[in-house]
Image 1 (tube, rainbow, N blue to C red):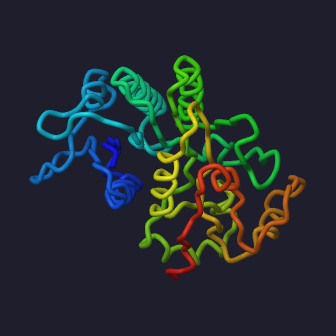
Image 2: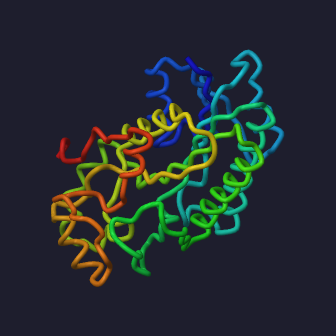
Image 3: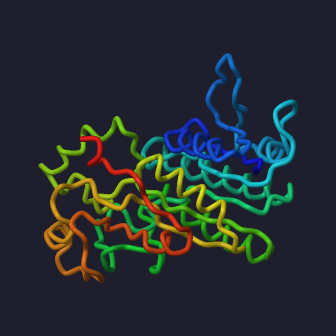
Length: 283
């Protein structure tokens, strides 16, 4: 059993991560910005305040003491929800404070939410090839995505400074809950409606499984992984979609009927990640 801090614990993905880690037998300590409910079952925190972030890595009085690992999910979750300046300053400060606080507290295992957006979303400039993967340089197209790219660069250098440190960036696709799936059949009416992320998604439960896999990963240092479901949001075949919407873009493998175009091959190979859920099971 490990003692694990989860930031953004009350968010869409965070709730699944907390449930999965608790089911695995870990002691999970929840941090979030939301007002505390009467039960006070998580710690309210402003991670842009370096003192609060560092304090939380050492423990919270009467709540928990030592921490073995950090799962950092807290962020302004998408472009356009705050101004560009606010999004940039909030997210980069929160992540730096979490990374720095963890290092100062002697925590050597950090898993955090990067984003599919660093791959070039919304792909107004077509990707270099399909399926997209971790092998080409980041292509941030928004201030939100720019921060995600800079966070990865920061993690690379922190791991260079400290060879015992592990920071894994999970480039999550668009997080979905079961109740979201009723809307999926309507995507077939206009393929362009979900073209922006190559028709990808991640079931929150599978996203949590990827976090658990990443925490169990032993090698030290930095690495990045695309995390998506094994299929697309569409009924139309992946090969047809790629040909119709991205003509001239090389397709580097034979695509399965509904195979994701956000390659999860690396996560499968190194983390043992294997999605178990699909919207097709619920519609």
